[in-house]
Picture (cartoon, rainbow, N blue to C red):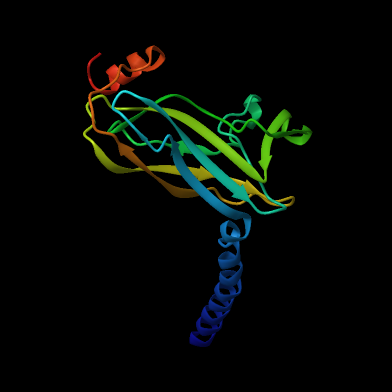
Length: 193
């Protein structure tokens, strides 16, 4: 009986060893698929109250594609990337994030999807941010997280949370009036509404 247990144990260990290299290769998709993920603000410095634009750029290698943040077809709503923004601090993110302007579309009849949007090459996502009227002058680093989904022609890989940092400088001087379009969101973020 002890011999059967040893054989069973040896078989189980061999099976685990056979699977492990494949799992390691499967986790290497990010290094193969992604050239660069980068965040930046334009302008990179502004006075309190001013509006700036956060830009997230994802560059993929040939043969891979990714997705927008929003899909128009409800049946494709899980085929998206996700962006998590930090709570209000020196910068207050306002409005809705915007998807890349250039995208491809295809139909996936087996899934009931009439329009699936996807991006190849370089995908650029943007969102407006207002420098908090209460921000003090100085350098800061804003940290966001991209839940990145990538596929090749045969497989979709498990989504990966990619930390993205972008440097920003709050300029010295009195606060300027917040743009009317974002005034309510900024006031709410500051606990004024």
